[in-house]
Length: 292
Image (cartoon, rainbow, N blue to C red):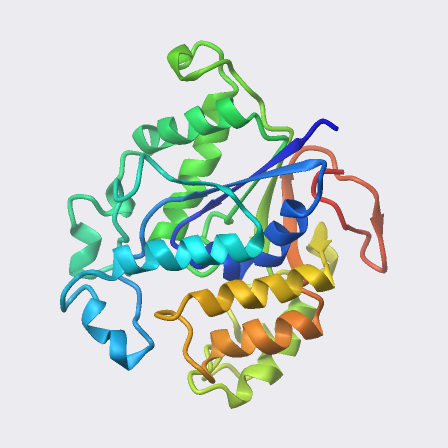
């Protein structure tokens, strides 16, 4: 059976699980699909949510990136994904932190990377793996994090350059990705999460009166695809547990991993921005297969 490739480009370890974990697990289990994950940084500036590991944080021992590397390995193993890459090699680009912070100006900060330079490393992977489908963030990085925005830029530029035969032929034979999706969340799923997060110790929706007050989310009739797989949801929850530094008992990520993933069958939503939409179903005609 010929495998059909699907490539995910993410910013930090845990993004692959939180945003697309059920989708990754679903396709990793399919004999006709090959899953590749490219992660752009080690997540060195992440928040350490477990007190006994607090000294790993960037302002302290600055060892969080190495720890998250191993969390990432355990998480992707739980998802069944074996083809993983750090853009340019492990540690090439550093987590940029948020806009206006000192970390954003670090000489290796991903936010400051020349887009074509970073994209060249992705071009090599695209031309080697030759995926039919690429999945990444929207231009706002879903919620505005600089590394998510930069991952979007690098992914889109990398897909463009990979298709140009005259551009860096030493990186391999040109390949045109057939379909490109941006991750999103449907307004209906956000509404369910809005209620579920009410009891979380660090509700990410605090201060919002309703889903319509949130700066992200896509109306259901503007969503193009929804991958939903109950067995994949269980593997996503297991992968979430691998991120000890990022997920503490009772916080919103714990709620997401243990409750919502199972309740909503691991439903993850996408907007198609390149290629032809496959067959859809349900009231909004959502695709169920990104490879369709």
